[in-house]
Image (tube, rainbow, N blue to C red; front, top):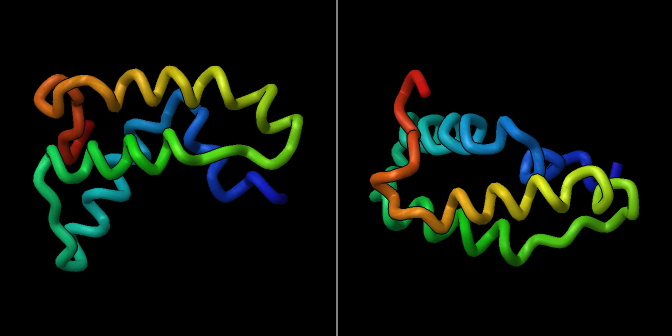
Length: 83
């Protein structure tokens, strides 16, 4: 259970779920520019560490791929309301 809440950081559906979160926050009045959103998400994911060995084994490689995706220019990242 220790890593269940942030399992998504290392999954293939990370970017679509990340966009869902952004849209949900916008719905409640928390809007971000692309630069603000993706730089904040990059910082969060880069600073995150899984606690369990199994999460490291299962998700670290995927998390590194997602970090690489977040390092792209914001206009290169696909994040539309319907993905």
